[in-house]
Length: 212
Figure 1: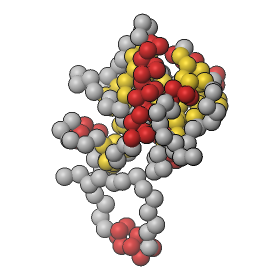
Figure 2 (figure 1 turned 60 degrees about the horizontal axis):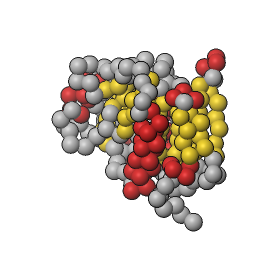
Figure 3 (figure 1 turned 120 degrees about the horizontal axis):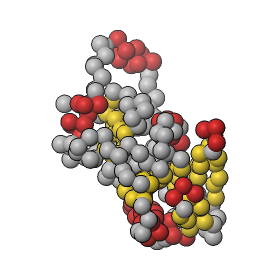
């Protein structure tokens, strides 16, 4: 049985750390072992660099924001050769082979490409949307985004806060540079250049109860 790790910040006593480090390290899990386990598991887990991380349940605000975004994008893309996926579709960063994860929303331009005949692991996202939580926001902005940038087809990234009205928008530029814009104004609209769509903040946060 694989041992899961939770993405939380722990402060270890140095004596405990030394004791842990003195124990023989257990073998890393291979991507093949992870996929065989994940396809039978009842709960979703992420894989990164030989380790498996159990995914925590989402808050009502998180779920509602994802639903709003999917609804808005699907309506705008319904007659175009672009496909919107949410939550349950696994993504692999094939350039490194280190990360298998479940983005909140993915848009693919053209034909989706999958890792194998199971067709449950996508390879070619164009746009990725993540809804931030307290325990994942640093990872979504840092290590995960670093992995995402290795995907050749990936050109646009949207991060949406669930505890306040705030959206960060990254767009790939020439020379592999990334342009950041952000807003917290209710009346603003995010222009998603790669898929020729717009996201109004009033729709993104529709019926979402935010702290005053």
